[in-house]
Length: 425
Image: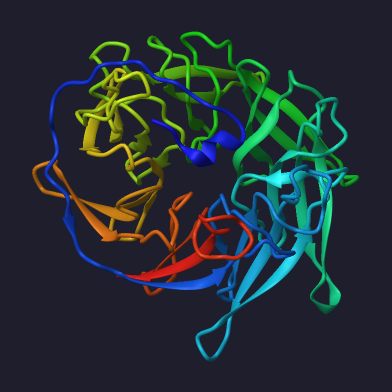
């Protein structure tokens, strides 16, 4: 099984065997899709890998992995962009370029969704560029600030210095004090880091936890989420008892140190019916339960390139117990190798929404009174639409918004350059 979007940075192989069936067959309820913007191989960017955010007045913000005007990132692909989409009175959306990454001091290949502070400044990470001692740079964390006449200014908050410190990966998270948290992938294992703002406008980086690559986890490709007590939760793609990933918790201590606890180690005890290789992160519900998805494992009969059955992935829930142990439950087993899920989001009614890169497109999962969840496809993407490369967000009316890495657009080959879409359920 191969995922084209992952091939930009890494390739993975799997060899595990699956059993067992736990979820109902998917239903389909069509939602109406509207493409808000089609990227071409131009200055506006291409391949919008990460998800979107809204501002207070309904503008959308995002990044593209490639595109822009720079030729510093090789293959004439560009180094990526940050963009805004503004809705118009006639239902059309207008794209505006906020920053054209040059792949040098300002960074390149922005690879996680933007987040915003109360003042409307935007923050994100880029996996290349900067002044670090890596080929092509080790990446940066950056801030985009709006100014007069609609112009935005980029400021690099932190330059990752070397392979040991790693490349920043995935989304960032704010705490109530204005500190930023994120993950980086090192030459071997990766880490979770914190960025603290100082009075002089400088930010200080602290590695909260360095993964050892063993039972504690390895390669945290997604970001972390924060609970009300200040604990951080995330996933690692590798490591754990079977080297097929973990869900972990980082708890702050009184002396400033952080303690890691592995809440679940995939495939370690049950033959991978629980899933494996979680690429996306986890989300929290109001009761403190965690939800996420795994790329392999479960009861599906997907095979790897060597013909081994490795499963098609799962949606899972982790519930904390009174004894401090967490119990995993599989909520859905994917059926096809095209159903590579890319992250989950809760709506206000407690339903889970997610996307799969190929095949089904956008799905939702509704909890039932008997503890079972119903899986339903909201929208299936066609070949010209591309495949969603991240999760979705909602507006006040319940419409969904997201990005596709591919889809109609000139200059990017047969698969297109990507889109921003809206789905009305």
